[in-house]
Length: 324
Figure 1 (cartoon, rainbow, N blue to C red):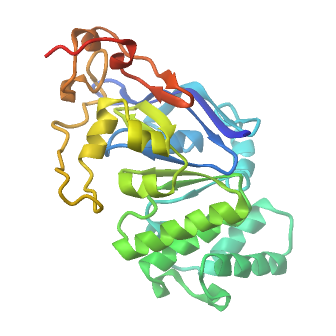
Figure 2 (figure 1 turned 180 degrees about the vertical axis):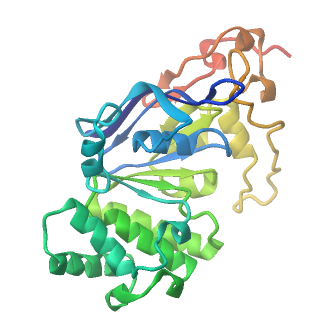
């Protein structure tokens, strides 16, 4: 299946008085046409920075140091600002974390969607309005509410409006950045079900950024697990659930309650994500890993294939023995 997005060795740093914070380092992954990819990890692992780097929305003191981002043949890292303005929304769109902050309170929700359409497509306002009404119906909102303002909608409905806006120019890829954070559990389920339904109907490619492992595993085709600015495991969802290889991936699963198995003991991962201004030498997870070896401090593990389309960055996958 064709790759819509290819990210290779993406590295993004933030300048600080203490030195560069290495928020994202040598991150590589692909998103296939019609695929939903989950990008998960604890807060501070670099997930949002990856999204902002793909969209070229990194601002000072942040900067993309190296790497390639190819969106269906278009080089986003080296594209001029004028080219990016045409690509955003038309080819790639984002559903922000907080629709309440993303929507302008002084414009109707319809006018905001219409504006995004007219900026990128050479059609009349009447045609843009008709498309807006269709989009609102697609996300479960009465088309006659296009004149309503954001304050007249609930949090879940605002999120639906944000999804409609992301779909407004029929992009090839949508990035959903913690778009259900702050919503109640029932509304979260409705929004996620809507996104999955839209993905199937429109053959969309979607990146879901989240720290909610159960949510991601319930809807995504593949999952990339990030820790301290790096991808430590990347595989199909069933492989992650049934055969997670990296100690961090296993830790996330062990720390997740299982409603189907209420007797399962929930075990948290000790410690916190390291300071990325001065991350540990070697494997960045080693200080929290129960299987850490001398090798883990001496060198940095590479992301290697352990089986078909299952990649892991851990020395345990090279036949090394545990040091107890």
